[in-house]
Length: 108
Image (cartoon, rainbow, N blue to C red):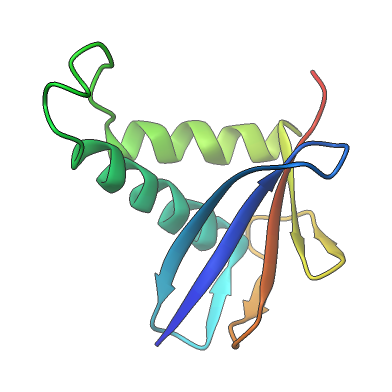
């Protein structure tokens, strides 16, 4: 079992957000990684106290995952494993300690 740290970055390299994702398998596709990351964010959001989240609408996992996968396909963001750009949802990555994953927002 590994925990992967995913960092959201601006195109200037500024870290905007960090999310830890639990991965039990030794290999994962980029699409699976995106779905796991979204599921973790939705779970964290939905665990907020009701009062703190009252202004915000509760997130829905499948809809959020679909939107994230679509954004990746339409170049809304780019995923880097180490320094390597990943361009396809079906690209497999080896999961190991100290794996560096970055989601970089691209200009619209």
